[in-house]
Image (cartoon, rainbow, N blue to C red; front, side):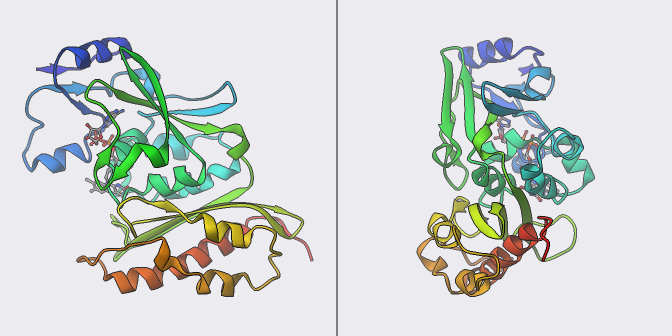
Length: 283
Ligand SMILES: Cc1cc2nc3c(=O)[nH]c(=O)nc-3n(C[C@H](O)[C@H](O)[C@H](O)COP(=O)(O)OP(=O)(O)OC[C@H]3O[C@@H](n4cnc5c(N)ncnc54)[C@H](O)[C@@H]3O)c2cc1C
């Protein structure tokens, strides 16, 4: 069977009746089959317009799961703190992948190298899951349980990503390290959002991806940096921080774990400095 409903309720009804594979942009799904087609029992949600929408409701920015990377880049209403998500979107695969691939698919596929995850962790994102039984909202860090493992149930669709209004402050940046210039699979990636009061860091969120089974917020480093002046020795705090307690990078064809540790330290420093440089500081 191949279903392509245009209403979310019809999709949820089909999911409640039989075991179906959800297909959005198919940029993860199709390569994973290693075949030329998706096979049977597909629920194609790409025709559901309500999933491809960004709005602000009840104190939350709501990014529909069907929003593509190109949609994010082209959205002019998102505040500056979403710049990291736009910088990330522009580095996903190629233009063709950005046009088809969705933010919801990136989260549900739950690859350790999913570039959207660190950005959304740094935005304090939650996940809205719908089924015929109702709605569940989970923090993103509780939704992704491990490499390719999520809390999604067979009868659920990830409908939206929710960002609280309080997280929509400051400026942000995303940096990704890979082995080539285009179609880069991350060796490490960092998403940083911070706010300054005069020249003092008042808030900061730093997330590291590709260096553990699931991307992680480094909250104890954030705590060390809050209250520090940007004229202080930020670089030595960042480079001397003990990442070994938080990250557990693997050895693979793209890099050894030793290299990933070293690279992620430098990348954290560069991402923080890039973000600070976005503030219009005088003197
Ligand atoms: C050449 C190439 C380059 C790539 N480069 C990058 C890159 O640089 N960075 C990166 O992070 N990724 C990259 N990817 C991976 C992929 O493009 C992204 O993860 C993309 O965002 C996946 O979205 P999709 O809509 O295509 O997901 P799909 O392939 O349609 O689905 C992925 C998984 O999520 C499930 N799913 C999708 N939507 C939902 C939903 N709303 N509710 C419940 N389940 C759902 C599907 O069942 C499937 O298991 C690349 C892929 C390719 C082929």
